[in-house]
Length: 205
Image 1 (spheres, one colour):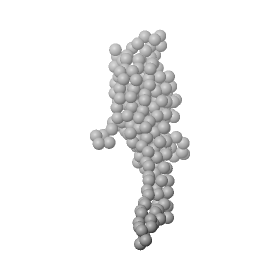
Image 2 (cartoon, rainbow, N blue to C red):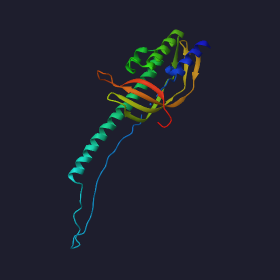
Image 3 (cartoon, rainbow, N blue to C red):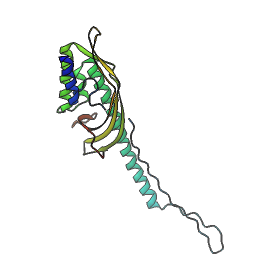
Image 4 (spheres, rainbow, N blue to C red):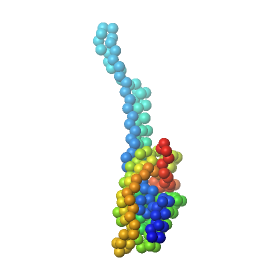
């Protein structure tokens, strides 16, 4: 079917209305610990007091804990935002509501253009997706600049069906999973992270 073929090509280039290049959250948590102890005998064989960490060591540990805790919190925030982005994208495609895409993509994202085109095609063909559901699991997340994050994540898309407005099935999409790399950017005016780019994970990621 021509319409079905056209939709399938859209999906294969990252604008896949059924499963898309979707995404996932478990976040890496960094823990810091330090401590030094020693026991010595005095000349009269009485136990000496335990030697605890010095003030400098304690201060260094506190500073490391603060830095590590802040980094872990930022990674967790990036993972939560990616999960939210995936959910909003599923909703945009299922409802054929392109306005929702502006809440998840940067204005210049190529994936934004492709998803808009997919939704326009769905409306033109008077079909919509049923059963779109994507689960996400973050493998790693780290800053790639002052306002940018790189998130490595797996996604798993449930089976979905493309149906007409009367409910007749036109196409079925199988369940799929993949490991992808996402680029999230903080807008200049602040606010929530936006998705800039999606790419397949490279070997060794």
